[in-house]
Amino acid sequence: MGKPNKKRRKYMIIHGPNLNLLGRREPEIFGTMTLSDINDKLMEFAGQENIDLEIIQSNSEGIIIDALHKAMNDIDGVVINPGAYSHYSLAILDAVQACGRPVIEVHLSNIYSREEFRRRSVIAPVCRGQITGLGWYGYILALQALAKK
Image (cartoon, rainbow, N blue to C red):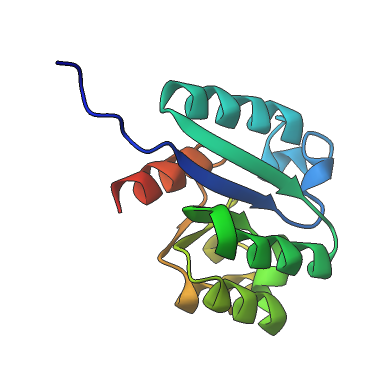
């Protein structure tokens, strides 16, 4: 008898504003990896872990909110890097709360060691957790945490 079939998990990765500029934007803060490099690493990890990933990047608050609404239907959990929206977007906070799925907030840089306005996330209180300052690997840690539930 083989192992019982484990349900294949499906997670959504949401990259927020300006993350499409990774590799060129402030490499002293964000490093030299591009968003494509990060997504390749995430897809490699997902393949090893039998995870389906849907990856979205948008500079638009509305598209991020629409993605969170979509997550209500067929996604097991969400990893979101809301970028600057984390500091003021009550609309994204509401969408995170409404989606009914576990959400982990990720930031590539340590937001607590940067400018004062970056040290507060309005989204964090409705997330399962927050990972900050560990670069691209924070996304992997968030996926691992979602898988452990």
